[in-house]
Length: 219
Ligand SMILES: C[S@@+](CC[C@H](N)C(=O)[O-])C[C@H]1O[C@@H](n2cnc3c(N)ncnc32)[C@H](O)[C@@H]1O
Image (cartoon, rainbow, N blue to C red; front, side, top):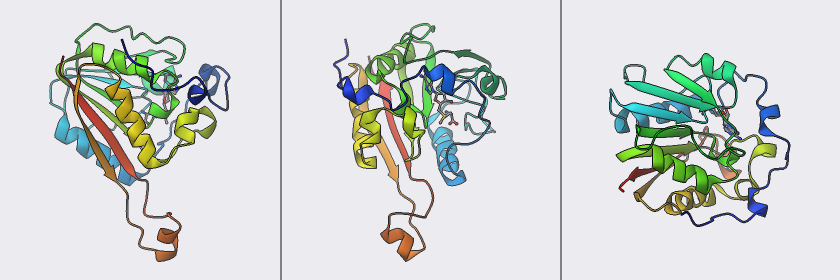
């Protein structure tokens, strides 16, 4: 059983319509800047094992995996079939609204890693989804949740919209902590330094901040 982290209000989105409507049209864009993507790919290079089985949860047409690394299987999940069909790294994929159907159609203990890139802010029931991530991971498998400060504002949950970057890191830590059986939680937080002092004073410039929260399944 997972303890609730969020109140009902904190799960609310400004746009309460079915997410399927919002993701109906493919978006063949990148949602963060090149500096963020390079850091994410490097993190994957350092933490993923070649030949393993991966799940890219809340994916799109890109998975940001190191091009030189091969994997036995990369299962993609997302909301738009056309985006997923164009993702060259996926060996198979499925479409599922995780705010409506909280159970993944995947076997227990089947993945060496579960990846979630720049998407966790859209989950209205993160406790249930993190429990599913734990269920499908093999013992010792790793979950890597990355995010920046960008979002589709009207589709992000209230708890995320109202939080600072620091509080968002705490929130993702609490999602992991809500599931018994995740080990030590690691946080990577890198805020690029702006070369322009005026922009730096305003907290602007220097590129997208890079945040990742990682944990391994211990039990
Ligand atoms: C900002 S995109 C990130 C896509 C990809 N991970 C990347 O790095 O470019 C957010 C993704 O979250 C997923 N998503 C949003 N709402 C969802 C929902 N209700 N259920 C399942 N997935 C959802 C969609 O697949 C969408 O492509």
